Length: 381
Image (cartoon, rainbow, N blue to C red):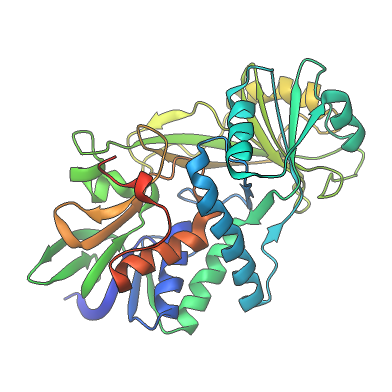
């Protein structure tokens, strides 16, 4: 017989966003039960692979900038409270042709919100960061305040701090069913029956499976899960290209939107392609083997733009983008269940917001509202 437990709030999915939600709720004194089908900091979903870019001049949409300012402050607060360094301010180089939508979006956000950016020629970029060799046909926009967050370390830290504040986290348990009725909510896993006042879903790429009425194929906001491959590449001159020698970068060039990070450890420089990706029916059954053919598209980019870096990948990883139709997040109450909150569809650009999203969800649970500007992320937009 499954064990029965009770909490003020149940959080389903304790990954990148869910761990921050559990920690924020526990810090506010609530009894919190987190349910995670794998282990904390696992590599099966969307929040792994060492690092995630954090930046202010946001090409996705200027409406994110107030949330990003709050997120930067929230990361600073996490570091102060924990004594851990999680954010590395390396700067970011955005590069593209003069008509690049990425550069246009960066400049629009910077102009609307008075953000500090620098417009460089390709030659200026090569002089500042010799490891990067953009072609003269490209324009460069540099944001000095940008950098990256250590994703698994942060996720594990949020979870451990939540436990210290009194939260319970069940690892290795899969949700079988849930219901909201009679003034409360119930969640049944393969081992536990849990009852609470409020239920929060932060399920990453499993959102459509848990909430088909919202995110399934016939739902209100159908989600598409894209399989993405990242790779790590060594520098043969043993310079490693760590922060200081190399910034984060995002290149809008023929063949893809290639992004990357300076070396965080001995694995080398991390590179991915923000564009494309195979659509999968379920993250549980998706192919996790990386084939050489999947890396061919970035070889030309590496040869021309990062000539010090080996084109052969020393390590690879598969993760998932959970895409909404407009590629903006979905943060709202369930339209049919007042006691159920959802935070999903982070579309490949959500992790940098983790600590402020934790506070926003906690606001909704405790206060029934939030003062943070998230109206543009509602389900009925």
